[in-house]
Length: 431
Ligand SMILES: *Cc1c(COP(=O)(O)O)cnc(C)c1O
Image (cartoon, rainbow, N blue to C red):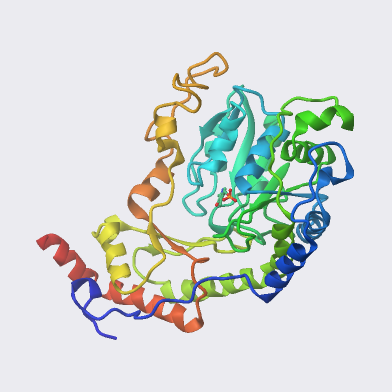
């Protein structure tokens, strides 16, 4: 291994492109072909009818998903964004109700709340797990709070014991956005199954996918019915189905097709193996990167497993005296792709800074339904903000299918950069 950093003209450690992550194989091809040959690509009917629940592959995928995750009901949707919208609606969230959500997530966790004219309130994250900090959740509860949206970010569950305890004491509902953590465990349970409603994304970038799609999970019969109604034109169905509680029964077409569900059945069979491989890669990385000064490797809570959609790192840039951007440039120059600086601070998106979600006059904040002045100012989530602005580095684990040799090269990259920190500091000082 040459010692001169590639950033400063040396030879990069990695001189090849890693294989693309691709969980789709012959089984999915055969499954999709079978559906296409049947000619029935979707069998849903948006009226009260046996096909209100979809066709054979939809129902089979839902049965298998419910059995896999150990829940009473699994309900497929055409994206997890749709799933989150359906979840907030099914829980009966009212306009102006507050729902607590972390800023360190994909924007749909927050916009699903706004969708029902409810108000997202951002609570900070835990610096070790990057999931909601229960203490910050508690501090953000007001008389208007109705629910908590927990996000199992990067592949491990939020602290559901603590969050469920808070929810119970304050009479709140919990939604689990487990888009990034299918197959992660909390004790004997799968992440996502401990909330009133939880679920998983099946978009192309996730561990398993159907192109686009999502799966909602719940143990509650009534919530399951409401999710099914919102998925499929509720307003046209409630009358003939005999549903009398029509609150939040504006329905959508959130239906997932037969091809996607046939593919999903094969994907579900592969989930455990795919997750095991991510865990093995992470274990190899943990071992190889341990002891590098000022580099914090992932922290997994007791009794939990982590499925590593992202392998998160936190660098003590102050202790190292080198800005994160320089470290990231040095790592990338060595051929390491898939490394990202910062993640998300959803509260700082223009929509929240300008407080305009619908129309041009600041709805819902600038209206009677919003009962207090909710702050989205920089500073409300200091942990998430500092991680995003200064110290967090994330390695995307569902971008490439890494061999053990590939992982060894990645570890070599970090060691090379860390062996040259003085050089980087001096180059910085001269610049
Ligand atoms: C991917 C993702 C979503 C959205 O899922 P889609 O299926 O793309 O709509 C929501 N939340 C989180 C945390 C995600 O990672």
